[in-house]
Length: 157
Image (cartoon, rainbow, N blue to C red; front, side, top):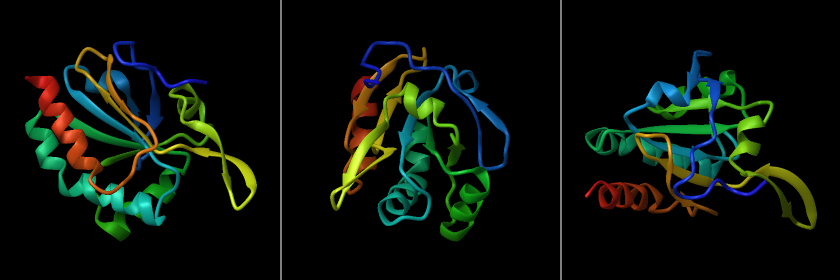
């Protein structure tokens, strides 16, 4: 399934967060949402990305934005990940991969000649009306939070 495109309505989601509280797209109406999809808790790139978003959380809050991470890990894994790295962002569990598929990030990948299904690291910026404002595909973790913040400031001008 292809990625949702800019100026289209963001696919609806309602998933449990790290505390097993249902969290939905509508909960953030009126705010910008940095919705980032990542492969797996406590892996090197995913850890750097989560720590960077935690470090810059207040920069996003000033811009009326919330950062929400989504992976196929369960909320118990998210809790361990958050505690271990002192993370301060919302992490949602999509264990059945329905939202990963709706956003087009559940894709065929390959490593060392082996093909498997996994999460393509992707970030969506959703505007306060619920439309996709920008998409970062095949995210490189280094500098990504700065790129997202700059784009958010640019779009708010």
